[in-house]
Image (cartoon, rainbow, N blue to C red; front, side, top):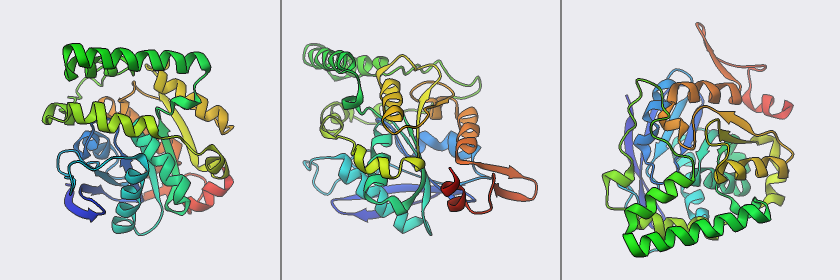
Length: 293
């Protein structure tokens, strides 16, 4: 059973959920995802992690003090830092998907002591793409803007979703995909404009990330390998001299394939469960294990 609460932060109030037992795992949602999007994943990890999820500022239950305020990845990272300091007793494991992966990278850049290890799943850091990849991305953005102007925001959003390798039929047989924030609210334009601009303005700090590269696990979906967010993850891995991990499903595998995705997360974090309780593979101290990576 999840415990729900709110946290006042600069310019907003964050709705968050905490459930499970074990070391803290902060889930940084992608796109229009909210705290509920990772319920399936949290359920899989209940006995392994204390999972923290939240509605990003401006979405659903995390209202902005000023609805006109600008958004930025940097501000989202500050929110994540505040949530960690409020909820967790120390550094956390972190998993970020899509825009959440960008937030996780900025969090690790600015507050490295807050993060034990980050799985950055398909971060749309398009500046890391090849020249051809960047040109294709710019063309895609132009097409999405044209569709938004001629047909409206929802067809534009469908185009954006398909371009990222999101397939809601690519899921575990008994897994029912939860309604997204896009469907629960009227935030489609909010996501396509203000959140999209925050992503477009952001640039990862490779110099800073190189200094903590052993804590970063770039990742991509098994079925979204050919789409640009996965290409960004692979480019990030190359820039940091890391290996990109392949996770079950596509761009939203953590939502649609929560059991398999959760097992893979446990493997990557080096955490397993036994009858006697929680253990860290290779060490009784997760920070010690990080030093050995």
